[in-house]
Length: 235
Image 1 (cartoon, rainbow, N blue to C red):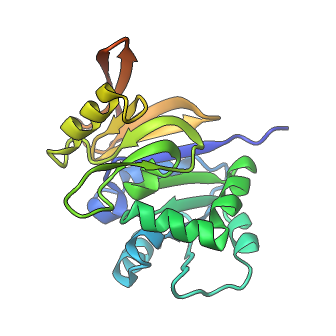
Image 2 (image 1 turned 45 degrees about the vertical axis):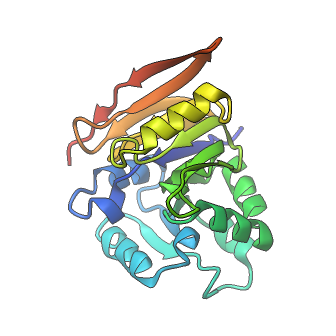
């Protein structure tokens, strides 16, 4: 039987932005068929920031799961592939998307993660960990700029996180799509997550009632915006 492929892209929220509201993280864990899934945090984009990893453990040790993390800067395993393939969920943190993808490629982690995805290991993440799955992402990897970045391409189109949380996100994203610089795509608010099943949009959920996502399409020279309502997740 073919594995069910899942990606859950958080525009913002989760343990790092909403430490008192575990709704999105609980939703992620609930997508695993296991009652106590193994969830591995990958903080590459933050330079494997110790405080970020500590916050992950502080949050997920309270939930029904087996948390671990994968560091490339302070490695703790010689066999990254076996370690990754032993997980049920990979949770990719935020930070510098460009640096993260360069390091993943250097270590062969991009290929390892692709195999894990094809085998049904759930992929999820926030900000850099959300846009990395698409063909293109809107990234602030260069300070004080928002630029197009070629990403992994597991999902078609483009994406921007923090769509309501950073004022410059919407105008930058929409102008780049309208001009043809970026592919049509999706903007995801903070506190909102878009769940993809076998590369198709399956569900949109939010830990804050006003949070949602927006799809942007090109119709000739016209940019079309479609508001995508999110299901509110009560704690």
